[in-house]
Image 1 (tube, rainbow, N blue to C red):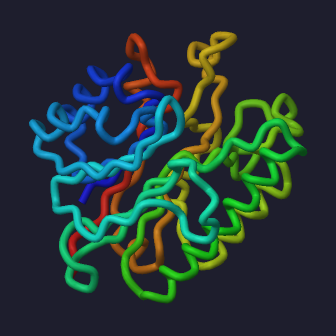
Image 2 (cartoon, rainbow, N blue to C red):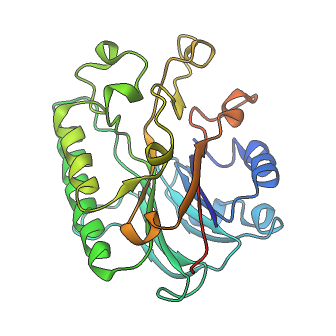
Length: 264
């Protein structure tokens, strides 16, 4: 099962690129972020024509997440538990590949808050959101099933994941509290699918539109697929597909993917 995560930075604006990549890469499951549309505005028909079922948790003009699946899509749950007042569309869960316990995998698409400027209210919201995410991740660890928590985490885990750490000093994506909150999720027992199989430093999933960042390879790795122990046992391949970032009218992010073996 090939599972990918991609912040598309407006699914309507990037639709030709999204469809081209779906045809070429043939992922089984895709976790989308920042779709920037309400549920009814999602290009469901065009994507369904490629064989995908779609679950959408949208929001007008901002945020928004979706799950695409060729291998079934059940038990969809919208929103990250823990704060009923949070109306931002940043989290969506579903089961793909069958029933849990019988080959199925629980997946979540995550658009974690950016948190800038930091310190400030937006950074407080980011850390509180990460605490809620950790609680949800811990709950799934207790269920003893394969889980993939994928998305745009807006977290640069280490200095090996950024072109110039000094240039990013003080940014919400790299602050010590941000990194500590991310590590606290990993320490529950989750595996960073990309880093588990790719040790070369300075490989990125995001390049800003400004300053020729893409052309200079001045990027950061902030899009992650975190695997529960049961999912990590199935991990066979992982990578970053930088091709879509070089397209015209590209998202500033590019897909990150992993391949899980079927149950033995």
